[in-house]
Structure formats: C-alpha cells, structure tokens
Length: 380
Length: 209
Image (cartoon, rainbow over all chains, first blue to last red):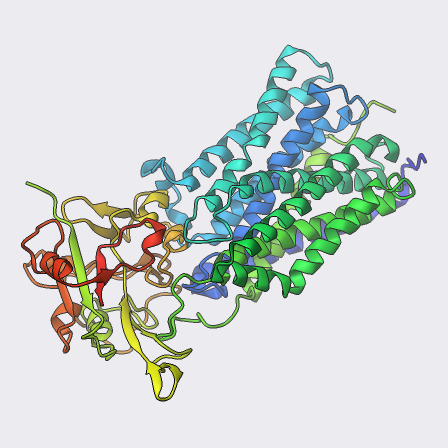
C-alpha cells in the first residue's frame, strides 16, 4: 500500500493554495474590523446567549493544540518508531493551533485593547485565568519541544523530559473543560464528565488533523510515508472518538433519569436537533473508516474519516456552547431583551471570522512546513 | 464597624406589574436603548401580562428581576480581571466599566439570565440628552453593566430609584445585617423566597409572598 510519490506537477498548487488561504485570512480580518467598528452586536449573540461560535472555535483549537502535544509526546515516550518522524509536525501544529485558539478569544471579547488587564488585574480564582495560564504553558512547552525536535532526531534525556512536559501540558486541556464544568447556572455544562469529554475530543481532533496533514504532505511530496505506518494515529483517533460517543450517551442517560423539567428539556432539544444526529453519524462513520481493515490503510478513506471527525468535533463544540443556553433558569415572560427571542444563528461577520481563522491556520501550517522544512524526513 | 449587607425586599402581593420601577431605573441610570437593568416579569401564562390557567381559575403574579447582589456571587468568581467585584462595606456587587474586557463570562456564570446586560454597540439614546443622575458612570460600548442598587444615590443617603418610584410601595430597601432595619423586620414577619435559592448564591433580594 505504498503510495509515496513525489508529484512535480503540483507546481501551481502551492501558490494557489497560499492565495486561497491568504484571501480567507483577509476575509477574517475584514470581518474583525467590521465587528470592532459596529461592536459585538455584529454577531447574533444576545444577553441571553452571550457566547457562541467564537467560544466553540476557541475550544476546538485549544483541543487541537493540546491533543497535538500529546501526539507529539507519545512516540518519544513510548516505543512508536513509525510515527516518531512526525512528532515535530505535531509539535508545530500544537503551536499554530494555540495561536488560532487565542485569536478566537480576541475575536470574542468586546475590548481586545484591554487584554493587558489579564496580567495587571489578574484574578487567579477565575477558571478563565487558569486557561490563560495554560495557554502560556502550552506555548512555551510546544515551542521548546519543537526546537529540540528540530535540532536532532536523537532521543535523549532532555527530549524525554520535554516530552513528559508536553504530555502533561496536553492533558491539561481538562482545564478548559473547567471553564464550563464549574457553571452552576448551566445544567448541561455543570457535569463532572465535561473535563474528560474535553480531553478525548481534543485528542480526536488532533489525530484527525494529523492524519489529514500527513496525507496532504505526502500528496504534495513533502514526506514519504506508508499509510499503514499511521495506524497508531488511526487507533488513537478512533478510540478517542468512541469514548466521546460513550460520554454523550452517559450524559443523556443521566439527564433523562433526573426527571427535572430543565434536564428533560435539554434531552428533548438535543434529540430533536439535526446537528446532534449529524454529530453522532459523523463520529460513528469516522470510527468505522479508521478501524475497518478495508479502509484504514487507504489514504482517501482515511482522509474522509479525518474530515468526518473534524466535522463531528466542530459540531460538537458548537452544540455544546449552545446547549448551555437553551434551558433558561428564569423563564418568565417580560419586556423582550434585545434580540433575545430568536435562536442563535451565527451572523455573516461571525462566519467570516471563523472561516478566516481556519484559513489562517492552514496558511501558517503551510508556510511553517516549507520554511522550517518539517516535512522532510530522513526515514526514506 | 460591621459590614452592611444591603438588600431589597419586594412584596409580590403588592406588586401590580406596572413596570414603573423598570422605567425609573432606566431614567435614573440613563440607560441606553435596548438596555434594561430591571424588568417586570409575569409569573403566569406564556406571554407578558397573561395569566396561567383557564377562566375563571386564573392566576397571575409579577416579580421584578434585576441583579440579586448575591452574598455568594457566581459572576465575581469568574471575572478574570476583577471588573465584577463585591463591595465588602455594602455587600453590593459592582461593575467597573473601565476594567471590563467584555468577555461576558459573568453573564454566562450568573444564574439569573438577563440581569447582566452587554452594550452590544456604541450606546444610543432615544433622546438627545442625558437623563437621570449626573453621578452615574458613562456607559461604554462592548462592556457588561447591571443594577448597582443605585450606589450613587446610596452614597448621598437616598434610596434606590426603583424603591422610591414604586407606586404600590412594594419595594423595600435596607441593611439585612441590621436586625432592626425595615427589611429585616419584614423578613421576620412575612414568608419569603429567594430566586433560584438552590444555586447557592444567597441573593440579597427577597420576595415576600
């Protein structure tokens, strides 16, 4: 199943790709400028649903970052020589994903020019500050680890120590879960399952990004890899997705048995939401493609599986944020709050920013792989 | 000197659902369009001012909803920069517009949805001049704000605007830590409830039944 061929015909591929991702990034910047001028009112957020797709994007990319750190650490810590050459790709992905996650927060907050107050007026009791601290740790650890991986391919004590740090930093994605799991006001979030659910989703998203990246890097002749060698990443991704589905089931069963009106409302909203069913189907479809002997080592099927997994995890985060707001604590009718009555559908500005940041993610990865020459491995 | 715990006691048997408190608040604090710190909610049917049940067995009450100035405020715990804070001397939960990042974590954390209001755009006003007290902090774009128990009035020895304006005399204000205050006496005499008491926030707003 070796399909490693360098394809010189891709000469125009790279410039076109750079232009596309560059334009998407520009679109994102334009959307952000519009939002800065008009105010956060350019979104469809409201006083009753103050968080939306930006926060979902933040969770998603923090997850990709954390999961990528774990994937970068595993082959160094444990004997996985076949995916060892890709540790630095994972470490670089962690760094880029982190930047994108941070930019989602920049997009979300109303007064980005006051961000310095996070340091000047820091309140360590706030779970958001735990997350900020974590972001800094991720950044330092992934940068150090990447640097060390780039210097030499030798596995020595320093590298092992750094790999342990990377693994721990990756595991700390649980902390992002605490931003939500500590919210007594939101029944769906206030659950001990959430931090673990965050971590497995993080791992699954990083696995899917890795698989997709490696397939693209091979197709563009930057690495030579046997798809069969990537099976450990298949397995990690599939297992994480399976645990994720299991946790959703646990969540729904416990909610349904609580018999409280708001819990039943949550179950009903989920069960009647098409997005929820798409989430389930994409997860299961991805798992099947990743483990079935007939598809698990075929690049195109693995790519489909990775895309399904990313779709699943994006939807999961979007639904997760929304589910926090569907069962209001105080339901009595009164004077309508500004744009409160309608269901949340992201505005064009919000989509612009999301698409722009995804474009920037692809752009930074592309440039990084070329400039840092991370794609060239000496395995072949 | 012992700290005060300012609180409000609202008599649901006197409230007539006239929204005067909400309007008094809006005027006193020069609130921008689409921004309400205090609202009158109907406890009854599906819509405002509709009763529950089938005629002739119908029932309708009102509660007014503003910041509950919780003794154990969920918003204060989550604010990453201390823009939302509890004034220890009065027990009032305050909001510092100059510090607020506009992350809206406090709005998310507050169980009483809708009492924290975000200025989604540059504040706009129906009338071309400022109204109400000159002592209120200027409103800012993209920050969170909410009821302050009219802290600027308390500082001058006045009652909150909503309490003073209530034509049904349903609103009472005072120090819950002082057993002789009117609010403490009312709470001893009458049965009461706090909104969402099960959330553990211990609101300083009580409703008499």
